[in-house]
Image (cartoon, rainbow, N blue to C red):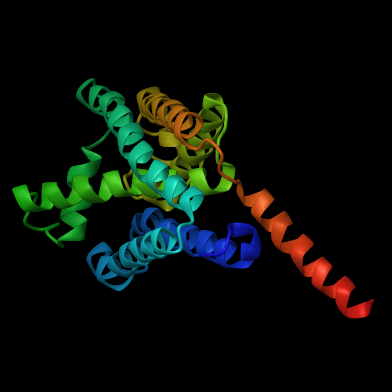
Length: 237
C-alpha cells in the first residue's frame, strides 16, 4: 500500500466527502422547522444516505490504511457522543428548571416518526435520542477533520458558534420563543450556551487527546496544492 504522501488528493476527497455527509444531519431539523419538508421525509431522503456515506468513507480509510483519517473520524464520532452526553446533563437540568420550552430529543422523535398528532412513544423517543446524539457526532466529525488536534478551548469556541447559529435559526423561531429565546426568558439562552460550552469542552479534549499525529484540513489542502504545482512545474520544465 502506497503512503499518504503519494495520494494526498484521495485522502482530501475522502475528508471532504465525510464532512459533507456529516453536515447533512444537523441541518435537516432546521430545514424541517423552516417548513420546506417534514423531518420524517428528510430522514428517509437524506439522513439514511448520509449515514451510509460516512460509514463508507470510514471503511475506505480502513481499507487503504489511512490511519490518520480513520482515527479522526472515530474521534469525531466517539468524542461527539461523549460531548453530547455532557450537553444533555446541562440541557436536561435547564429543561426541568424551566429554561427550555420542551424536551428536544422527544420533539425530534415525534417529528422523525411523524407522530405530531399522536404524541411521543417509546420508539419515537428512542429515534429522537439517536438522532440527537448522531447530530453531536456529526459536528464532532466536522470538527475533528477540520482542526485535527487542538487545544481543548478551541472546541469551546466551535460549540459556541454552533449555539449562536442554532438560536438564530428557524428551528428556534418555530418553537415560539423568538430568536435567541428572547420571548421565553433568559433561561433559554443560558441553558443553550452553557450546554454547548460543555459539549465543546469535551469535544476539544477528545481531539487534543486522540488526534495525535493527524493532519488538519488546511495541511491536506496545502499538500494537494503543492503536488499540483510540482506536476505543473515538471510539465513546463
